[in-house]
Amino acid sequence: MPASAWPSGWLSRLRGALPRGRSLPDEVWRPRQRAILAILWLHVAGLAALALAHGGNPEALAGVGLVALVAVPASTRYGSRRWRSALASLGLLLASVLLVRLEGGAIELQFHFFVVIALIMLYQDGFLFLIAVGFVVAYYGAVGWLEAAGTYPPPVAWANPWQRAAVDEALLLAAAVANLASWRLNEDSQARAESSYRQLYEGQRAVVRELQQSQHLKDELYNVVSHELRTPLTGILGFGELLLVRDGQLSPAQRKDHLGRILREARRLQRVVDNLVYSSKVIRQDGGAATDVGAVVHAVIEDLDDLPGRDRVELEVRVPAGLQATLTPEAFRLVLVNLLGNALKYATPGTTVFVSAWIEVGAGAGRAGDRLAVAVSNAGQPIPPADRERIFQPFVQLDSSTTRTASGVGLGLHIVRRLVESFGGTVEVDSDVAGMVTFTVRVPMASRRSDPARLGGSPSSHLRSSGGSI
Image (cartoon, rainbow, N blue to C red; front, side, top):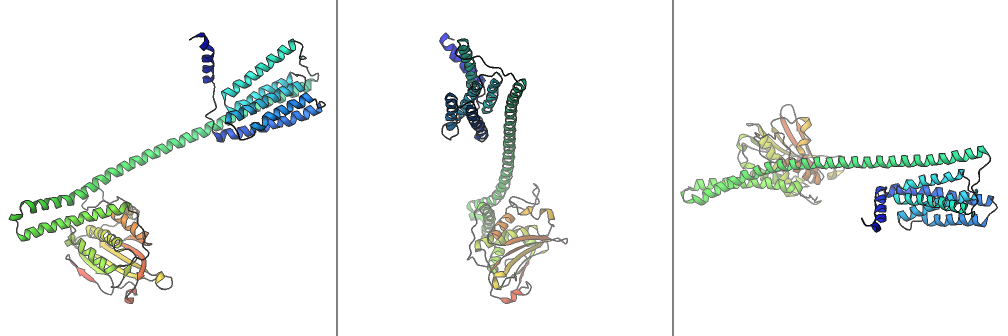
């Protein structure tokens, strides 16, 4: 290293080894700055009183004015943090010089410099610490030189030993308090930092867990959805290729059967796609929506006529004419497709699935308090109480094993609840010990055309089917 570069390099290494204090957060620096400024202004007031007690020496009063002049800009909000911290530190150092000179350079009062340096260390700024130490060293060097030259009188010694002891102990106690305050504040800052790091670490772990759960859910969704989409697509493509390749060899009955199978698989695919779309769709309520319940029920029954296993159960519909739901036709159709589709899939073979609707008279005056109830019941495996809320969550099936017999992606009941609640309704599930599972949807009543439906939910008409279309 060249000789000319040695001093600057040494100073750079020294500054790099000292704490810089720039990492001190503003919310930590501000209260420390206020405390140091308060101590500085107390010094201004005390020095002014001491100067007046010594006869109001103009030089002493000028010194007090200089300390106050430095304290004023340090107390404002102008300038950088380091600039204001440096002014406050300079003010305390000047106050120490003035205090020692007002008392004739008493040796006991020179301990005040140690108190000031301890206070300056609260900034945790190595640059300010070096400036303070350099200031004190320069002060003692200048005073020693002036005393040797006879310009300054030698320091006085107080004759009263109790006075000396009291001042020494007071300054020593002040230095100890300043160091203890710095110690405690640093501990608090470290504790806050550790707490922040701990919270950050826990937050990162929570994010990792959520990402892992999301990935697991994504994998499950991919497996289920790919199976549910691939199965009807395989049927559509298979029968479509048969029609295309062997069209001349097929009889009209075979051709009709193949087209029917294609249509059945296409409808199954449509139901899966509808559920996937509505699982993430923003549902907006239509205050003027009114749907004929009977018409939608019969349309859904016809749509589900080709459901696998449909011919193994009977279907009984008890829906009075003239009932209207506040859901839109599309929403009400999707609610019934999922509820009735579940009932037909999980019903015990040889039993009857019931679809019924009635009006529940509310406590309000007139139609405002009435609600329309639609229930779908089937005999099947009971639903445990612990699972009656969980089944409404997305991608949840009570039997999620690879050997399950019922198809689906686990979105049907979740979509039913979303749709019904978005229109101000509720959906409940009841499963008794006899094995009858009932899902009941209640929505505000849109209008009423037949008063006989009021009678305790008794239907005015019903239809029964053992597997054919209704």
